[in-house]
Length: 342
Image (cartoon, rainbow, N blue to C red; front, top):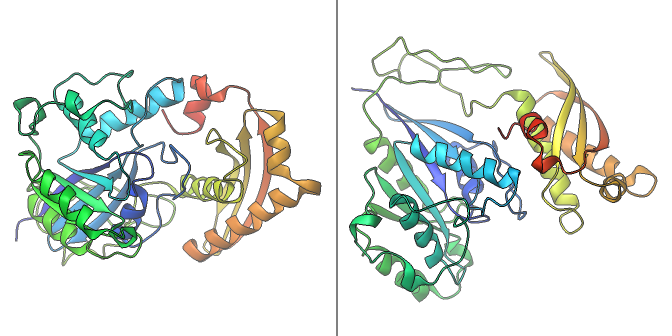
């Protein structure tokens, strides 16, 4: 049987459920989930084997306007992931009222009119290219995922959305799912396994510290490898993402999304992970919020993060947390590099 391998970009607006879908598809938490806008900043790759196909999912940042250095970096990450993919899954939250703007975004992108000032801006539906027009036609496999069907009380709205989507000739498939429960996600894997290109696999079995790549084989590898790779993110990055998610969970109302986690020290053995991390904020007032009264909040963040790390990696965790202020870091290239965004 011929092997297949391809990259699939998961795109959509903030909070559509892209990261939740990725975690569900790979059956492991590799991308953090938060109601905060722009939670996903880098390209998070999840890898699965389905029959003789290897599917590499790329979770992209949500659509943004590109007003700051950070947002422009996120936009660059999105474009790179989209342009480098073999297929696209667009996730739409079917519970929102203005879902049409997602297609305004894609129509602009495909027709080469998308720029940093237009990304994420709301425009009237009447200004978008007409349904089925040449400017809205895609050249790569493209599927729409209508997410959060479990939260939609009016099911007739779901059918109305799906019916209108069928008028877009660039959409190959429409899936109705709940990324949270997994309902309806199995057909997505089967669809993608059939449309990714014939190609050798790119990722192979790995240990917890490293992800190995090998392009020397050119057959189906299903019977030759014990495939357990779920992501090409290194362990240090995954640990920092867990802490960042926990900060968002604990301080969703108090803090903006402009924080990142800096790893100061890191070591790993067969049984233990030891690390020192700094939570980077932009103002002294934010530092006080993260620390909490007598250090109560940062202690809470530390305990919760350790519990998540222990559950996911099955190791003893030693974690030390600090808080540092780096003013205006979202507009400083040095800090964006440290945060892994560029």
